[in-house]
Image (cartoon, rainbow, N blue to C red):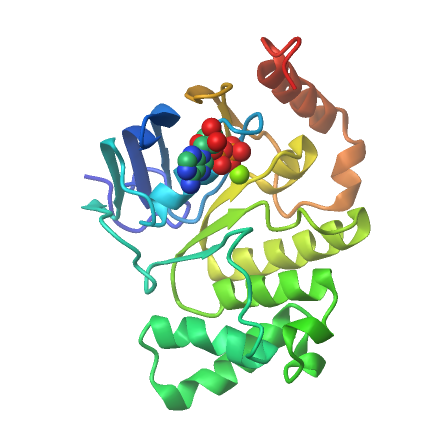
Length: 265
Ligand code: ADP
Ligand code: MG
């Protein structure tokens, strides 16, 4: 057995496993026969055309949507509902509480995770400082820019000790420059804390830049078309985007993604 001691995650059991999962909303098939696993500390992106079921797969991993067929497991235990101590997420439609300050929006994640009250404030402050918002902790969401609100949501997801982080297009509302900045901050934090990440994006370059592996889904209802290893070393820097290997990778992803999408918008 080679289960012990490998920090890279190779040879250990997966942090999470999606096993032949089909997801339905009533009669609507949202995702079909999805299987992939994610190793401890690994960063895996899900890409695919709009409506192919990426968000639904993420919700199933987070325990918010039950699998109609198949099973999601975390550390070899079936997921049957939210597990805030182990899994945190940033979903696009999961807004901040408007009546709570940035600080209190972050603190609530610790409350859900069962962290003792007296530790919450300092940890929430620290999480806000790490995303560059230490000086606006007392502001309310309507007093923050869109990018700042998104960073509060990221701080809220990072603050707990949950080892698995689910991110659904967390940078979608940001301009290109903030995207790069926040992406770099996120990567630095994740490398420090060795979180396991499942990341949904429609940006091929974002997926290539951030991931260890990329799950490419087919059009609606999506299945897994291919799983691509990202052959780029870490730490990664923005200069990577000028590397021919980076472009080969995004070209390959694009070819996979759009292979059969002529005429589909
Ligand atoms: P993606 O994130 O890849 O754009 P989604 O997971 O949001 O895809 O959606 C996959 C499919 O499931 C789509 O056909 C969508 O219309 C449908 N769907 C998503 N959420 C719901 C819902 N709450 N009720 C009914 N159908 C839904
Ligand atoms: Mg989505």
